[in-house]
Image 1 (tube, one colour):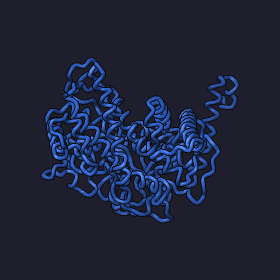
Image 2 (cartoon, one colour):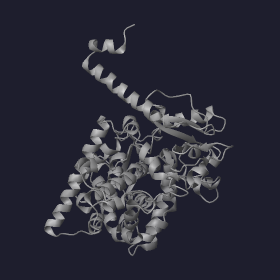
Image 3 (cartoon, one colour):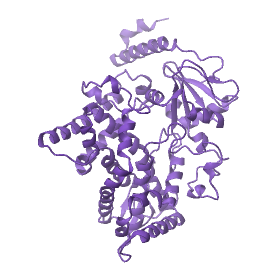
Image 4 (cartoon, rainbow, N blue to C red):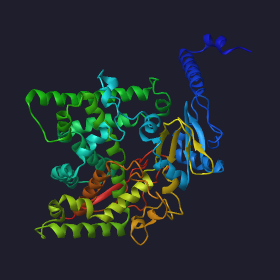
Length: 512
């Protein structure tokens, strides 16, 4: 029999390179995996996976993977490897509570490993020193949380509300002037959310410049798309995704750095988040890291979910009518000119009302998140002790990563009847389906890690949906503008909220 090494000279250069890389990766994996063995009390090991890569379906069909994995084990919990990383999947009520309540499961380290090293990689594009004393970025009391808490304070919201309303009105005026009367919400609404998010956590220079706004969005999306299986399992390997991520982060670094340098040269100051970060003495690396991280958190789900809300409303005459009544009621409460167009009356609604007086729009967003945001949450046991899961004597081994799929509760028919159906009435007081079981709704985070940006995400959604409803009559349509019934299929195997493969369109006419 001819050995592999004897056969190498007859193979093409690309094939030889592939074989060598696989051998190196395989050797690394075998060496690295020797340091970890699941204990006898860890959940049952799955009979699935490949050498080097582990359970690839964790990336390609995550919800299917979780459903089939929980059916293979007596408790519904299971263990597997992702590359060299040991992972424990949890399902069910008690493990869910242990996952979200345990102080020994670290949020930051769990995501750092299995979320594609998301996405603060600007440092790779520029050799910038990160102060050792500020190495805690996303943990409790860390740099990111401290800066974000300031930016989403009520004072900051109130100060920026006129800018946000102006941004949305400008986007809607552009739609009004479009003779087609047709829009893809996953472009127009998504872009609006990006502009608002840039306004609240980035800088006005970019938010005010359409060309720069589009350019930075393209770089951001390159970073967002870099969490490939290879990039996650072997972040040290210079895969195309890692190269693209590094390049995009570097380009964003240079754009923001130029804005900072221009402000320093001219002495010009602006009342925006970037100016706040500059005045705090933050390094350029930290500034870029914060802005990219905040955009990543704010746009990835918010932009897509608000687009889905508009899509669902365009397909549902009943809820469209109920939302319009709510918008008219709030506008009438605060308007000093009842004869003005409804869109103009909304300009007088104060900030506290935008947060608290649109409960039906909030229910619309809440059920959109329940259906769309079916990603997985991650933690890591960073202690030297085993952590009880809550089912029998099963434990989470020290050093293991833990994951919980939100579909385990959000698509549970015992909690949410007909769970794949969008239905905002689930959250009305007489139903309160999300209150049926502990941690029955996870869309805004629960336990020790509630969503830091929840207030802003809700505010964005309330403003956009209310103003769109005030300005237009609308319905769901196809690309040709022909009315249709039925929203696009949802990819439940996605790793987060996702744009649909077949894009819906909203046909609209001005109400003025």
